[in-house]
Image 1 (cartoon, protein in one colour):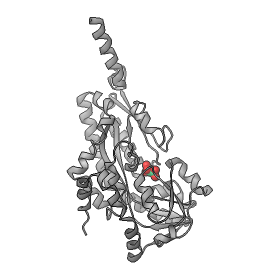
Image 2 (cartoon, rainbow, N blue to C red):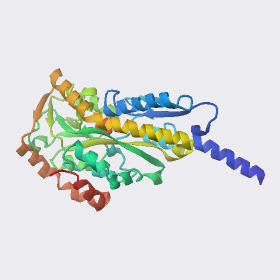
Image 3 (cartoon, rainbow, N blue to C red):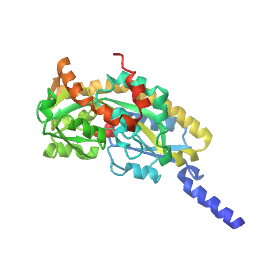
Image 4 (cartoon, protein in one colour):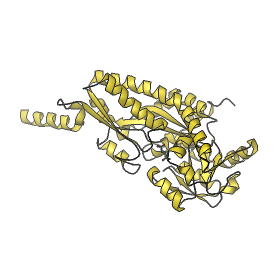
Length: 329
Ligand code: LMR
């Protein structure tokens, strides 16, 4: 019996993973798919810096940007297997785990990033951080990037201009429906493969905030970028629930405080960073930037907005209602 208990105890310690090792610091591998000079990239580096300063010897953070350790295809599996301990995937990538986060993909739901921020402060949003608990995924914070812009190999002024084009999208059925609404095709594709697919013409258009357009040089392979602000790109900082719970309490409290500080910094600077990236794209002069008139933007809104209804039941009418009231209109 005693032997059995001892074996079970050893098994429990092994299952808890690296957090319980006493022969060195807890190692947190933070893997992501974007460049360092983006809201998420900077957030990851700031997290590492603050942990180095405040938890030296106890916790060691390793940051792997640009899909160098894991990419879109395998990062969630790696997190669930505790091969990596922190990720911040776009909210469009969680469909297999919860449908509720689809709210963030609905086109023209949020007027601007300020509205998104107001939504993230509401109780309903805080609840969404726990929406993947049963899959062993611990939501820690929401991080922002920015409003998405449409890019293509032809100028997009009105929805009809997009007809027949194939757009690279993140793996989200809402985004698929968004492009179907304008008569376009779409292809789900890992972020790391997007540049090549645009360059070779496998897809002819895509959507992303300025910081990703600029840092991935999408503007060098997309001659036209429409300032549509039609949707938003945001992230959830997540960990493996078991791993997170295995961190000694006091250390976890300190990590939570660091995460709060980093989240504040990321969300404060995201807009400025996207503005700077927009200016860089314009200055580089590869792509023509197309502003939309109020009328043109309304035309996009009118064809895309009807898809909200299709997703309301999956998202939850309460979540959708909480999101709809954050605009100042
Ligand atoms: C994308 O795949 O377009 C984005 O989710 C990349 C990112 O993480 O910003």
